[in-house]
Amino acid sequence: MGYRGRFAPSPTGPLHAGSLVAALASWLDARAQGGQWLVRIEDVDGPRCPPGMDAVILGQLAALGLVPDEPPVWQARRGHLYQAALDRLIASGQAYGCACTRAEIAAAAGSRPRHGELIYPGTCRHGTHGRPVRAWRLRVQGSIDWHDRRLGEQHQDLAADVGDFVLKRADGLWAYQLAVVVDDAEQGITDVVRGEDLADNTPRQIALQRALGLPTPRYLHTPLVLAADGHKLSKQNGAAALDLSDPAARLREAAQRLGLSLEAEARQTADVLARLVAQWQ
Ligand code: GLU
Image (cartoon, rainbow, N blue to C red; front, side, top):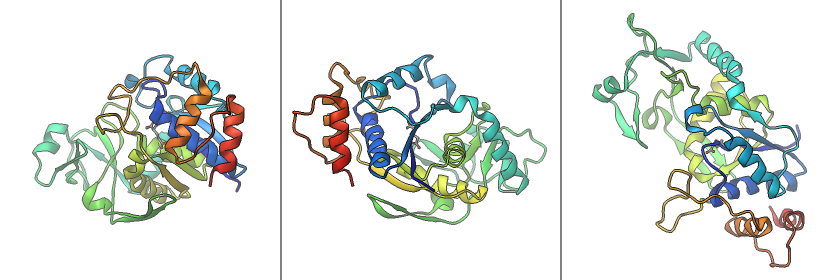
């Protein structure tokens, strides 16, 4: 199958210098390999996505000359695909209903904090004992070894360090992990190129791919852009929206963060992009 890559922004805010690095890297990798590049709007967490932000992001990408080869898809319209995947996992015994509240998980022996979430101690693994199901979880076993094109060989003890993670939340929203795995497979994505902050999610996604019998794409996690205080630049810490009065300059800055360098003569986005594709490897 030919190369198919994607950029998958969550429309919680406009693109910033950090998200542009991921967008540009995924575009360059697709172009350099003669592949296709898609855009997927990851709006599963509706309450966190201001109305119209998807259009803002698509407009920013267009201004930068980053135009997808197929019409974008919106995760908010794809709940039937996520439900079908969850149904398969339930039918094969790989997903189970969980009746625990956050407070119960916090109080349970064996729950431990991880990145602001709690590692689930497995209370409902063998049934909810008549209590109503709130969320659905993947039954996790063992560890995952995987390869990243930049970071090299990676290992995570999924069972011990992550635990049975949520696929569908108690508030009815789909978890990012399930949506991304279902969509990458349904869209025939061969190569995932995204920011390094997402690398820690990859073992969960590989476990889900295996549970659903789906192929695992190749992964490349790009360097993060740090804010002046050393934290990752993100919408949450108020990263400024890109100033697109000079889109070619923004592309040159993003390229620099990827270790590519361009003389300032390239003033048109198409010219900048063509020169960068030639440098990408
Ligand atoms: N939607 C995620 C984000 O904006 C990216 C997901 C992905 O590339 O897998 O952080």
